[in-house]
Length: 214
Ligand code: G16
Ligand code: MG
Image (cartoon, rainbow, N blue to C red; front, side):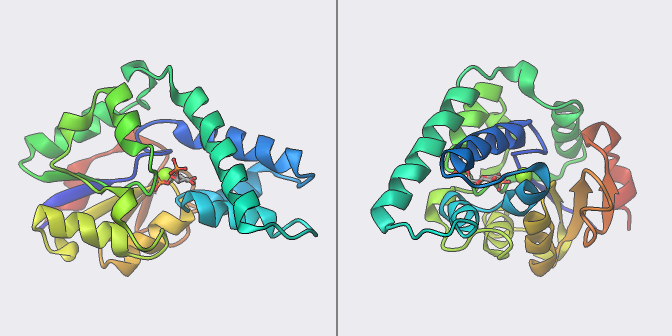
């Protein structure tokens, strides 16, 4: 039986995925690199430096380590500006209800975001207390699609991965959940999240009993 649900943050609980997109697109444009929503799908769930590498790979010039650091900091400053004024009203529809449903069913809740801004966003949204465990992205060695983050969350919760549901809006995230041996609930489009066990458009459609049976 299912004993825990581990949520991604960006694009699942809040629309911060859009802010990441805006900040990366502006940065790419300053470097003369094309950037659209399709390419952005590959960046979702991928950490800051790895995302930057994927973007700069499209440029014909080489960047030094220092230049990359400057660009990553610029993107992050822009992202922090965009998210600074978030409030609980910026929770995506169904997010709070889904978190409450998991807790009411006596299951544990975890957060698995590779974002180093995750704790700040949780404070803005006032949902830190909704989680039994929040993985600290700063302590991870690997970004999604590696399973480390979901395995770490399950380990902190003391639950076997096979008894966990992972909830994700990104391709990299779904791969991470499956590699961790969990049930993968995709948020978005089944055409994009092809490896998910089940895809729902958003958390208003979250029905724990449909996944937690047996
Ligand atoms: C999120 C986003 C990614 C972003 C990453 C790192 O991952 O989906 O687009 O690059 O965080 O964020 P930051 O620059 O704030 O450290 P996740 O795991 O929350 O989907
Ligand atoms: Mg996400």
